[in-house]
Picture 1 (cartoon, one colour):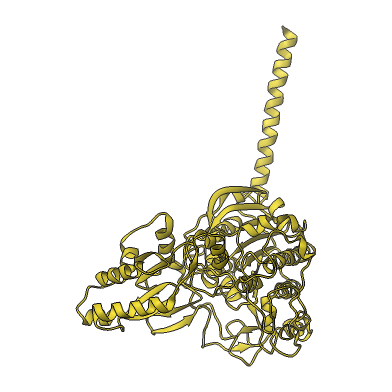
Picture 2 (cartoon, helix red, strand yellow; picture 1 turned 135 degrees about the vertical axis):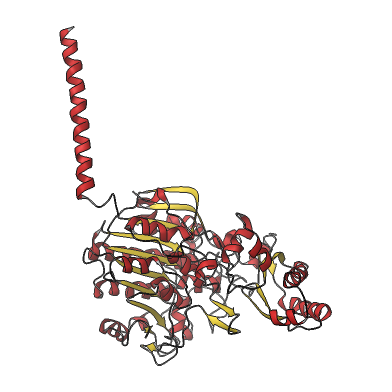
Length: 557
């Protein structure tokens, strides 16, 4: 009995000292470490792939190498049910929503272009005539983020660190750099093609291009990518996409068929037409080259103050628009992008240090299958007859109100009415909106219609009206919102497009990787505005000031 009692006492004492040791260790962490309060990577890298559907991860997965997309999926966190929660699903609003943590209803970027009701003109999401082009004599650099009405995660990082953090944003498209960079970016660079082939910027950021950018432009790197485009692998291995020669794809100038190799005179000409690089996967390679050079020359992630590198890959969008989501060209573009990502990650490992940076990858929107292809597969789909609909609407307006001038603009599937004319005619605005909406509902290809009055007076929590309301900005959006039937678009019969609230346009990848990220995956719904607060929570900084998203807690260690 005495021996048994001895062992019991010894066991209890052992547990006591073990518990005390664990408590002491935890106390040590709480007093000396920062992980309880925040995670401090040396660099945050935000990657947005233009027009990337989620299923590009799964369809092409077996072709990817181990160091690109697979590295993020297998060593990071994969949000498999990630969606845009608003429409229109296009590049300007997409990039803005990723970085602001909110939707167009708050951040104000309601399209790439939209009709400005105050000045009664079309405006561009990043255009700003008050600034000058830097690096080109053209107007391509007259840009700023002034139409984005809230802060970005990149802004909040800079503010948190008294502007000592550095933010560099890069994309082929100006809006893909200007909007992610936020209001306080040290620099945003985009590619000006035409007959120049240069990376440029705006006087919003600087008065002259840094020497390293000038040197890069003079290196001939852009010209080296004006070359024939053939498949990375044997085209017979591309079984995850449709036939190479079909009626659903567009053509480069001089081509008779949309087939590999693409090597027309316009593609290969050495002295002009640098824009053509954008519509090949080599535009992504050029973007990667420039991002790696920026990483080194700007000394990003080289001290204890967290920096931010925002990179957008735009060529995927140009290729998708020309060839469609089921094309060999899209598949080849993603296999080549996978190699470019692997190059970027290798440079990050070497320059910043593996485990010293945090990265996320998403898209600014997805895309629809080519409706002509769907139609041939006996799937309901088609195209809007804009000419017939415009004629019918004009007749309706003249018959009902005595004038067509009651409608001022139609863009982004929104109708803008002239409120002054409606008032002068002694008409009720909400009733006019409802009458015109009812007329639109009778048109072929139209699935449903909502009015501004409905957006103002209802709070939608799910479905298409929820998505539309998140995209509806009271000061900037139109009076009538039109939704096409699933599978229907207003576009050419070749290539894919986007912009709708339908699920094929909203379902995009969302991958997190690196310092402070817990490996894993979730099928729970996440939404694009969740990205910025997730990164903000990880860094321990203020959320962007218009945030409506929430941190994805499963992602964070």
